[in-house]
Length: 434
Image (cartoon, rainbow, N blue to C red):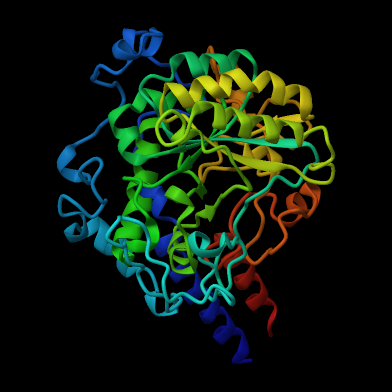
């Protein structure tokens, strides 16, 4: 029958569209084996003195050519990136006609996002800055993760790394066997690649936090794409892995930005508790930050999180934020049953596109397949982990049990059309039509 070749043709056409954008990461280069990471013993990687740690070094296994990258700490379309064949091919592989019709947001005279004129009541664009919306309103968008489904769980996350002076902080996390979701800024990764490399080596869950920490809804489509893409590429170059997850700077995301992130098979991770630690000592007293920590810690034992957990926004942006985290982690441990990275609390088996690093299921031994491989190869501190399967696109309730999430998406891949698994399923289905 004619139906069979037609169906197969449709499926193959879908595959062609899938591979173009979704498999972008396969072209990334890295000399780093994430299952066997070694970091040179130099003052910048061993000292506890901030000034010593933040002296520039020439990194090994890091083939960085400045002319081929955006300028650090500038919007990622800088340095002519949009005119490169690499970026043009990526941009043109995306079906932009399918993107939600949402305007680029504006900034007011004070540098804040202008929300005037937005329909707050219906919130048609799930604009977090305006309404803290976390459930996308438009189709074909990977659903946000914003809380850990497991009861009495503290979702440990740190933004704005890798900080060049984080040695003592990472030592503390390692010594106490705490694993966190680390949201790395692309410019920081380029400047301090050993810091990013250590994050993977220590078994943390590494995710994308944009190239230059801009308010993403105020950027053009090209700028949003470049901010995400070049951060992905930088993390891969420095550490050998490419993240499946990202967090918008300031939480500024709407369905246009989410849709662009989905084209790169990225899923948004937000939060449901914010310590405001970044403002401590500058905009607010550190005592206010401590009071916020105290309130959140009490929630672990007063029943607030008896049926689900949280994801807490904290930072490794400077000594103040890292020090206050170290100060409070013992009390967090006493009041919560679990302190986990988001990948683990969500049962995400593969938080990276590469399958070389896998995270063990929630509640199991904190040893991953990658850890076993690295141990056999002689790595002194292998890339360990723990976790499970990402929430599929369109899932509105992140409080569904972690076991069901694992059953629905054991690979950790997004279920939007960029999944190669979905493409294979289409071909298989087409082949059944006779």
